[in-house]
Length: 192
Image (tube, rainbow, N blue to C red; front, side, top):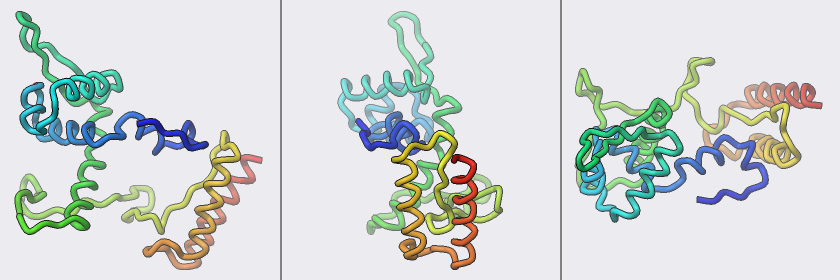
């Protein structure tokens, strides 16, 4: 996937998408997180063409999401294991699971996400450890970093305006938006 917006080198989301920005990569990661290791396990589980799977696995190894390990010498056979970098995408997969359940429900009940110990249902959320609260678009904002270029400043300004208009359904009250504006202003003054 080729990302071409003007702030893509500085944007962590755009950089991440160059590494994992297609559905096959995320589905391979999902299957790896569910224990798949070998080429035939991925192919059987996904129904993906072998040439497509070969390319995806090679790219995922080169992007250090998976590590290729030989388990048989003659003929050579390999397993693909999650790296720490690949495993750090688990919250993305869990959040996609939750989003799919919530916004794309179906009648069939094929899977349930449960706690490993209690077997009780779980509901993944994004959580901010610094402020000890769940994260949502309405309670975060962008602030330009020291290397911000005009495209980044334009993106930050667009988000400021959206917060001011209350465009996010879960936007914080005016006082919280004022705190966010103050943080962005402080960041702006540091960057000037």
